[in-house]
Length: 417
Image (cartoon, rainbow, N blue to C red):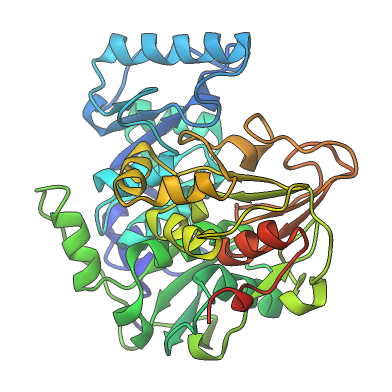
């Protein structure tokens, strides 16, 4: 019996010819990403040595620029750590700032067949590059950075074969909501994506799926490699790499088909994305106080362009705060050059710098008591974006933008025919 992509990479990284579900493997780590939440003074422990400083990436993203004194102390510790070990791949406030997972994509830090770890739960985003990437605990990040290895239990894999083309006004966020709503959580399993639809899907669209697979409780999420992926990497990094494909006789827990052409706009109702999504029509007319487009899942240039297309020539409802946060300053600059930022601003959208911001409820758009928000970010948990009494609906950037214009949850097909 053959192996899945995840099993093949774990076998290679552990020096074994074959691994199977249930095996415990110790694997070499190629890239360790530190984010600013690692450096909070109350949890920081000084590292006496790094296995390979050139394999470490440090990104200040969750609270950037810092909104308080604790944040300032946190970033100060991070800069001292970077100076101590001469870490070159450092993304401080400024030109190369961004959410860590978008920064990884912008700079092609995740190569096919490699293994990347970070303490942020949405690290699986990098699986779009045929890389095994996973969010792990803070002690595990310290261990990987110090000794260059970590361990995993090999899980079973569920494969999704994507076919067809997305209809107008439907995005890969809707595809995720379909999977989450129909199949529920994927605890202790890996997710593998492929199929004929890849020929029509950009890296940004695919990255939405790998990022959001964290919300399925998947261990790893990974895409089949193709020319689009390889060209993205080669345009940003000269290193050689090897792509990994599943064996023809790979054993899966399940193989499921997703026809993108049959999808419609969906929303997840508050407090959960698992088994909690409905067609947008079911929630249409629900009054909102805030709308948010951004995060590592939906803060790409494509997401901002789609948002601008919906709001162009219109005005955000005066009772709605519409906040848009690019996933990186590189995305911000590209959006500015394309006229997207001015289109958003003219519609009454507040565009922030690149940061996790409102997604985590720390700054740049915290929700108050009993407020209702529709977001394209990663989570709609109770209390995620502010007060626990606030309600958070989740939809695509198109659905969020349409709702911000109307002031109520709205089907984006009204604006995108």
